[in-house]
Length: 161
Image 1 (tube, rainbow, N blue to C red):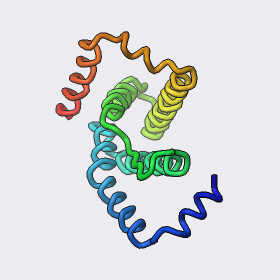
Image 2 (cartoon, rainbow, N blue to C red):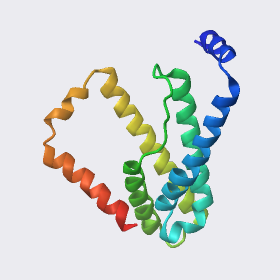
Image 3 (cartoon, rainbow, N blue to C red):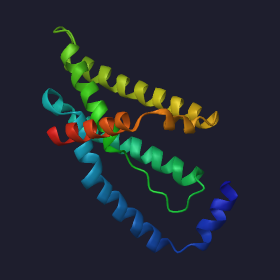
């Protein structure tokens, strides 16, 4: 795998590739990553926004790097989606409200980080299992109103924040 990647990189012109990467990186940070982190760390969690931006940037970099090296699709661009951000924001807000009064702000932040990490790992494991066992066609058994309602709810919550 790495020998073919090395050979491909040696034959490609570096300047256009680097310029496209810089433009996409800056565009993603300004239009996607910062607003998404602001949605998750809203309200009483605003003081943790720099940590949220760092977490979102790191996860986007890891996912983008893994997909760039392992995907068979050429020119693939990966970044976080708003659907997950809505759910993570609701989860972070609920955790912040349910923390006991004796908990420090750092305890709240660590609890939110662990919850986000666990939910990401469990979602990834579930989706991997669906793909591994070729169960993707089960989605057809979900009624369209359920899927439509879910997507409409996400849109509603995205525009409320």
